[in-house]
Length: 174
Image (tube, rainbow, N blue to C red; front, side, top):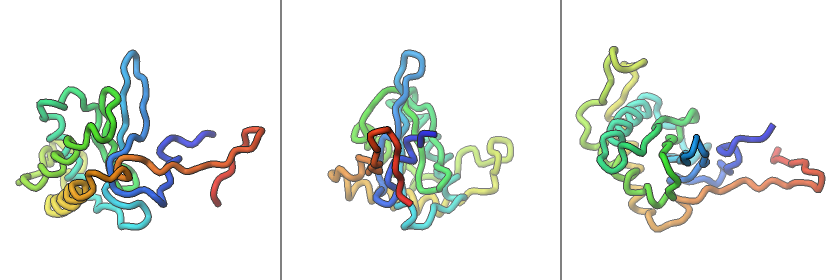
């Protein structure tokens, strides 16, 4: 069975940033999945689940109300490993082209007084939110993006190289 694209990334080398995870054609349209990585996998602690949940609500609301991007957003949600988010957009923009959207989204968290949709009626786990920690993670990531804006490593995935024999057999790290 082939590995899915997100498992071909060398997680030992990935740094926080904005990366293209995959592109797909759906009907006649291209959609792009972006990896918005907030922490270094396996080197930094996972993001607190309640903070991640709050970031999901706040940033999804911000993006879906952004006048420039609102019609391009398909999905915003957390990674299972709790080190970042997936963003799915219509089209095929580069990570550099969505940098401003991501930066503004995380910067917007600091002004949040409440978590949108964090009620029993609107959320499947409305008591699992942590706005204060969400603000801390958002500020940390926004500051990181600002400080590293000109560095290509925050936009280009480190791919795992796989040795392949002449007959097509793959060798993996053990």
